[in-house]
Length: 372
Image 1 (spheres, rainbow, N blue to C red):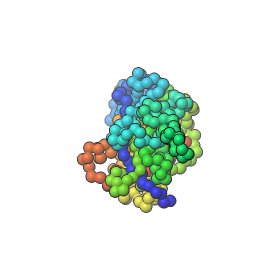
Image 2 (image 1 turned 120 degrees about the horizontal axis):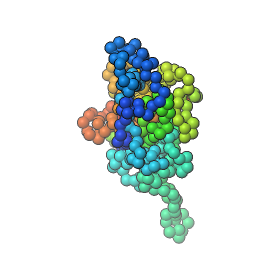
Image 3 (image 1 turned 60 degrees about the horizontal axis):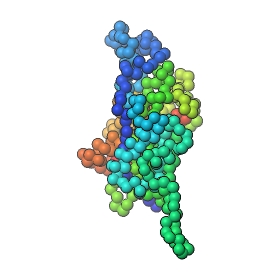
């Protein structure tokens, strides 16, 4: 499909809570952990693992084996506005992206906000975010109205909240790219934030060890002639209905049955296949990439995806050890870390090609190909 405009990345930003909770600290909140069973599994993989280890040490080693997480950011009580923690994290990340882009707030015409963990349904989290950022609101008539055709309607910022689970940010980004390309908006703010440490079932260690809290943002702009900012090159998105990963409204996240291995295998294949579709949409292949920024659900999933891609010169970013699974905020946080090191610090060469790929419960999967 031929579009009138190109979309470029003007700036990125992220926010992570101050507190990083280690596995041993998390253990104090966990119930239902079978230390003896975990110890048996650990000794099968490592015969030298001490049989006399304390329960918290067994838990620490077990978490590292299961998902590769050493610590994860958790919001502390009172760190952000109570009841609006999700929107507050999003505002911090968005402000960083706006600052990086050196963008005037008045120029932002649209916001797409990905979350499924806000404590509010109405007002929409996107509307709350617009207010927190001080973006233009409402609509008005400009002109003195003395002659016919003398006035025009002036629109404030519009905003949309989306829920695509862990792939929500990329769904939001695809929506924004299309709106930029067709000329509907000149500047669109795309944000993702999730607060999951208060929605975990701590009596289910298999799910409680994974998730964390944070936010990421990207400011997308219409490309100008001879624009050197990174362009969005292609994208793809799809869904496949499943209840293997389940969450009631305002409830806790859990995995149905013993579905871990199936979820893991499906995550690897989905991120690979949707990534391939996104690459094909812009005439590229995995061999054309310099880096892949995948959703960080599990270290074994990331490693399996790296092997499936099978390109030794491609960096497949793995930051789960310190970030945990930030849900829909994962990809924009990774992108911000990557871009700030590469672009804003001006220490790396430009014109790289990146693949952003994610899978979420439901199942949802999306991918975006971008320059960096």
